[in-house]
Length: 359
Image (tube, rainbow, N blue to C red; front, side, top):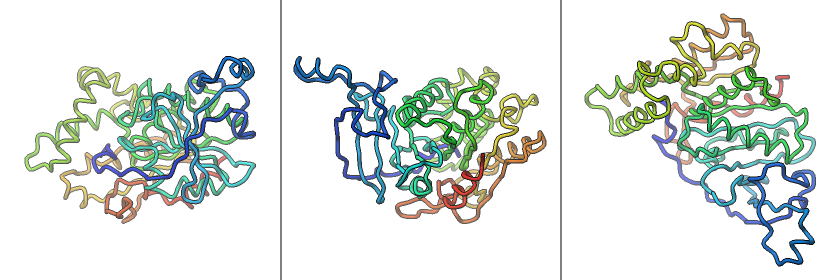
């Protein structure tokens, strides 16, 4: 299954304080100048003050204390509060041990990650600057498209510039489509020699092969007695597949293989070659009996893609990839509803320990 949004999460109600600050105020956290024009806001003061402070740049930030830790919401476009922003969870002390992007699933808000997992809090406690993005393409993004990956690069530039993250280890991971996005970025960063490449990547029950997903979706739509939730999701996804990939796999197979982090049918293994030396963790909970009760069989489970990717990368020489299957770990907060497609598959203490061990 691909959508976190099939079983939607509620918003987090935090007490937030809006602060309009000079960018130089938070010394050590915000650089004196902003190199990203989209982060700048015009100083709307009188003419005398504008001349006096012409060299300063204003940034709109939201600071809040959540779960006993300082968080910050940074909007790259101050006129848009629904997308193109990220939440930072700060470690309690300096120096930091690295920084991590935790990417939400499809139709998840950045705030939902703070509710669904202890991972942001624990990672920050271990000294990792933790960033939870909502990309410019919004919460319905597929994560692998050019626009989303470009937004990812913009946010990386914003974070690394503002916090002077020179030679810091960079980790990346996500849940569902967020994990798909993470693996795609890893592939692109290595194959295109980006200046910022991940030290390690993880994905929690992420779909990887969009050709497989298209075929599974069309198959499920043929079945009688499909649950309403699954039917609605499949109809939506089928429409999105055709839009995102400019047709069906029969009509545009190249596009499906080009954008998918993994393609079962691509015997050249082109997409995954950059991952041969990268430390990777893949989490899944293949509870087929639970899924059968929802009208989904093995062909519609993301474990299919994750196991296939693991097998191929191991055969290609990657000795740093780990495929983790869990049992009865999948529950969604706040009511702890059973669901094997959940953030809770990744145990924070063990995952962060593994991340910090990667060089």
